[in-house]
Image (cartoon, rainbow, N blue to C red):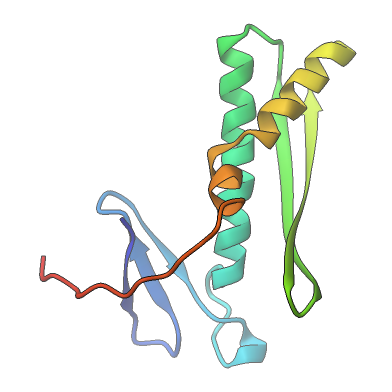
Length: 130
């Protein structure tokens, strides 16, 4: 679970999973200070991180000689009813064409992508004091 709290700066927000804390902020053009990732950037980051970790874990488990992977994700809104995540991965290492295909398939199977591909529902629940 992620918990957020307002900071004194306008729109600045601290978020924590109970172990680590990071900071988010609205962009300057939206009245924030731009001192942290914006909310949509955090959504892009969640997918990019998941793809990156999933590819690396797959490479480790299957002894694929991957040196590094770089991922890029951006949210696109081509119309009023569609949200699309465009992503790219750069794989480094002495990889065969078959190994590259295998790692690209692993990227498509990342858990965050699987979650975002499902029907989503939102439900407000009463906050419990910690």
